[in-house]
Image 1: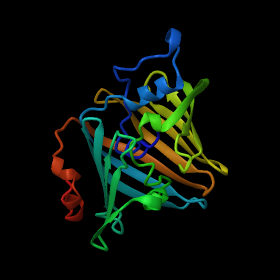
Image 2 (image 1 turned 45 degrees about the vertical axis):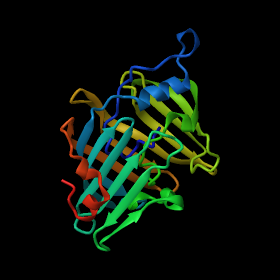
Image 3 (image 1 turned 60 degrees about the vertical axis):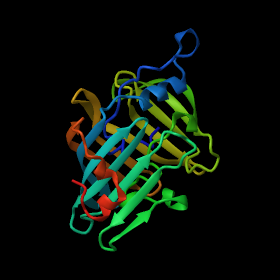
Image 4 (image 1 turned 90 degrees about the vertical axis):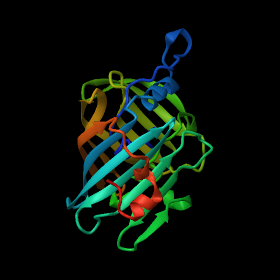
Length: 265
């Protein structure tokens, strides 16, 4: 999970209810993997559009506010997403394009366009662990993640802000993953993550929280969330608006040439 965090977290700020093909474990008991399949297979329409207000807060309380337009479209089990910064002026026109593949053996494709340089940068290798545009999300966070890239254990059940949740521990199969484990609280009603803790080799690194959620267009949606980096003492607050689904987004939005020429609209 939680690689859905920005585009999920972000574009898929649209968090999805249960898919149809979830099979529970023996005697009908839900397993950790069952819960993460539910979270992963939530329907969110064929395409999604939203406006994101992103507030970056440093350890002294200083704030930087950015406004982003985001678009996402499914191609079978794969997804293509693009984010374009509209404000402030110093980042206006910056665009991030991601092609996310369901196949765990295939690395996602990611590109960043910086208008000041008039150049598209491909994000790969060690760059995936860099923080995106000063936020508390790495480039690697901002992509889809196959459920079986991690092993999942049901730790129990707990409430988050009064909402009953399953508590899951997810450990990456790849020993070189940036995170050593995640602990995720998944809503029993909405089948979406309401809280997640990210750990690296030194301990707790980040905490993700959903502050407000509900149904938009028939889909469970995060309206207000935050990611706090407890080590950097930095926080990214996200507020979503103007959410639309199934509008028939043009395939041309999701091309490298589109972000380079400023044609994403």
